[in-house]
Length: 145
Length: 145
DNA sequence: TTAATTCACACTAAATCACTCGGGATTAAT
DNA sequence: ATTAATCCCGAGTGATTTAGTGTGAATTAA
Image (cartoon, rainbow over all chains, first blue to last red):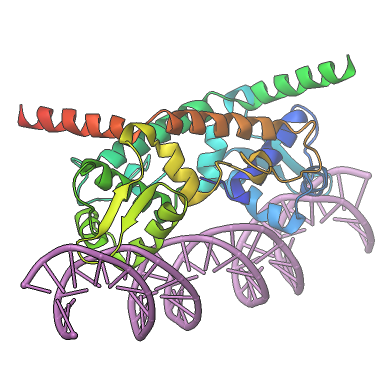
């Protein structure tokens, strides 16, 4: 039950952009340095985020990336689905196009994985980037207190 | 967020043994055929289950495998931890020995994955093989009705 | 014109996955 | 005592995925 670095880094990068939402575009290099991710690799990952409409790019000097919409309207689930594919502990309970399975009618393990899938999806869909910003703020205040 | 076949097949095999708990030992061949898993491969997997004390084996002719304890006392979480390792969407929130991370103090994405881990663990620990047997029973009755 | 940047695409070493295979050890049944 | 059924063990393997690197072209602000 692990995420690959795609999802892991993807969320980090999106959170970084959320922390600078509303300002100038952030160059990838900056995000990569701040989040400690290989720039070349992150370039590939953010291409996915751009193609699926989660971020927008500004080309040329002084360019960079910005969130495509308000942090309130982007959830962890959105990002993970884009970076890792549909939520599916096993193929036969994929959110989209569940794989055929010889015994799907009476397979009880399948229903366990469906519950796991739903629980994962519900949790990840309930956390927005804005929620994370608020948590970061709170943690920051507590650290200073 | 996928399980490998280790966890998937592991649970299937354990559920199969649960369905025959209290009778003679079940030969691996039978489990493999019923669950549609390669016998050679399942042999490897069940070795893990035996070494960690979830099943017991009876060697020799008429031998096979039996659950090491009551289905009520074995949870999906027990099986998945044995087959897939500690629950950990990302290494820095592993249930055991979380990997060091340069920014663990203030990393908000980390706290997201900790919540995901806890939610996964709570759900999987709450489902026992006995629960699954009851569900199977219920489904069976409904199918006949 | 230059420097900073995104964008596209090809490549790759290492790890993991999902097995197969061969053969030895143990034991019930005959 | 022999046979057949079974567990047990370790080695090997092809395919896929992972986590990158590298090269160079296109775009644009300064």
